[in-house]
Amino acid sequence: MKKQTAAAFIAAMTIATLTACGGPKQLSKSVTVELGNEKGIKVTDILDISKDEAKSAKIDAKKVNFNKEGKYEATITYDKKEYKVTVKIKDTVAPEATVKDSIVVQTGNPVRVTDCISEIKEASGVADAKFKTKPDTVAQVTTETSTETTASDDSSTEKSPVSSDDSSTESTKKDASSAVYAVGDVSLSSNDEITYVEAGDYDNSIVVTDNAGNESEVPVKISVIAPPTINGVTDKTITAGESIDYMAGVTATDSKGADITSSVTVDSSAVKTDTAGSYQATYKVTDQYGLTSSATSNVTVNNKPQEDSNQAVADNGGSGSSNSSSGKNNKKHNSGSQSSSGSSNKSNGSSNSGQQASNNNNGGGSSSGGSSAAETPKQDEGDYVTDCDGNKIKVDKSKWKYDLSEANRLGSNGLWANGEPITSNDITSNWHSDGTETDASRYLTAAGYY
Image 1 (cartoon, rainbow, N blue to C red):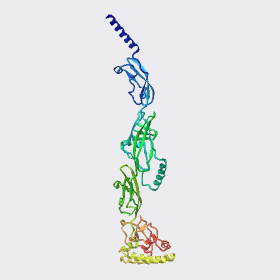
Image 2 (cartoon, one colour):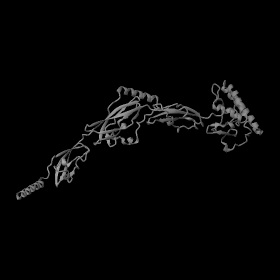
Image 3 (spheres, rainbow, N blue to C red):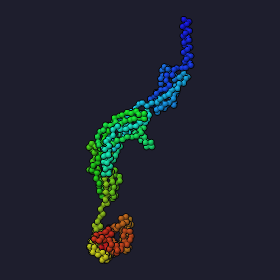
Image 4 (cartoon, rainbow, N blue to C red):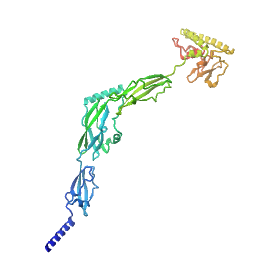
């Protein structure tokens, strides 16, 4: 019994001595950890201790970059003793990509991988993604030619981005400074694209590869549709003050023929219907996929027709009508000889002036409807100039013309609206060679020169 006790004591002392001197056995001096796995170092793989004993061990992995392949050094401290270990970071897992449920693109427009992928999982944070199948090259060339022709012949169709939800738009960004495309937390080294020129549903795949060469393939279905169309947009011509029904005769349909006329918007903010000129109104329509088309209408606004000068004078009392008639008779004579007609007209004008002056002196009703030459028009009725006889003549200076309602008050001499005297040369030089009137001759006629 004493011998057994002594033997047990000696064995215990031996174990205690070995433990105090050398500690547990180091099973391995290196360990391989998957990229991104920060908890990949296990003490029981390195030291010959139990799981419970491993709980008291401490791992110092400050020098290890778990997100980059390479060899690093770590230290394990157990029972006051340090154990050095080499940590090998390896990337052996392929990236995972998730594609969107609905991918729609307009015919002839490119679709990019960032339009199709909503999420990528990759520990390194860097990957490349490309379409597995490319459309036929010949078709591509034909498409480019067709697209250029269409662009030059019809500018009504606007290229629109592929429709996508807001979250994917936020997660898909391009860093212009480094030319890196980001999908979530993963950066793509390129943004591969393809173009389909015919409408239809296409099955394709996107191959995603990380820097370690691990790759995965994800199927993707792409719907290619034609843009919506706007029909019935025409140019319009109106008279100042009139309104415009921009939607009269206008319809719109999507690529499948569905009526989307209610989605048409018209931007007519540049059109001034009360001011003569040329303007443009723009029509736009957007379908349910976000594809947009536009059309333009040229709008012409004409001035209101001016009242006929002879009618205006006639409405002013009748005498002006007689003078106008006299002017027309003399105009026929003027077409034969401008010089002689000038003298004749001046004489005729003097006679009319004399008759008018006589009427004014007698206080009788003049052709202006009872106005007297001695009257001084009220200054708040308009702008006035004074003729060579001292008569005040009502004019519209803004249009550089006489106000025809006062034109018959002129004598044989007078002033233009800018205050310059009317000369004999004015009388003989304001007819076309074929005897037709110019604007100036019409005012002279109304003023009693013919």
